[in-house]
Image (cartoon, rainbow, N blue to C red; front, top):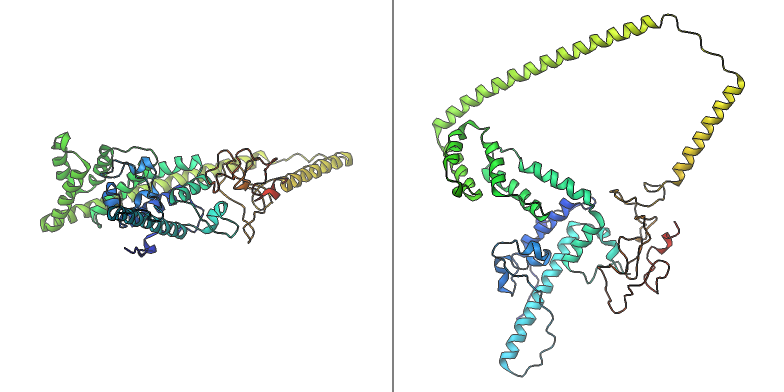
Length: 415
């Protein structure tokens, strides 16, 4: 059986033109996973998830619906050496599984390279500028290692919690609101932030109680037994209520009247706020004028300025000159930001590289060196995750003793 490459729909993959962030990396992983679900996998334990397991680590994979086993990728069975029909069929099955896996990996790499720029993988490129021999998991891990700082995770968690409080828009289908909060919950769980169904329901009730046509439906929901108050039933309950209200002309008429009254009340509240703000600003202006008047009265007879001697003036000029010289010295010696320095730890900006891919200045304020990857990186020979030739790689290699390893960026060591 001949296996051909399936078409890749890159229109569903978001193209990121800025520096990768935790949010963009997570979004790309989820978008690519959806495409891989349509690719047939030989292992029946993947169920309806297809080859999507190749972008998730074991922990996240086991959170998927109906998944109970970690999937081991197939390997190349090599040339057929058997002598029976049964052995030949087994070999063909293994070979087909291997080909499908390789096609899925190739498609995943293409989607990752569409989602991000090639220079985001500069550290993984070989001498020809190609990124070869890395799995999807390794490519995503590279992005996390290079561009995501611990404080970025905390900021993203805070932003996602705000999404959980997303306002419900009655002009849209309720499923739009449900999907927003569900996506935020799924992303939070991928960051080891657990959000239970009770929290989703509580946020939903806080939104629906602002709409007068759902008051009775909220009361009916609260009367239900706790065991029936699941997120699935919550969505079903209020979806039905919202659709019934849209089809009920009496409810629509009453809702229109209620909204008109509510709009008038809000308008009056806004007018009161404007009046109060104007009064407060007027009082502040009066206070400022009184303070200014008092200051003018106190400064009727300003004392004459003291005459400075030539020696005092010369001394002052010398102090200012020394201070300017010190500022110029500090400016020329500082790192980062176009001055030829290197990237300070914890910062988000990187200096640009030359057109040939070599760096003009350092990114990291350390002395780490890797036999495979070179200098000015976040790891060393002992902790390298990107070893291409395990037999040749020397874990004892350092910047002072590279042991014949990579010379990439070594010209920056003296800077």
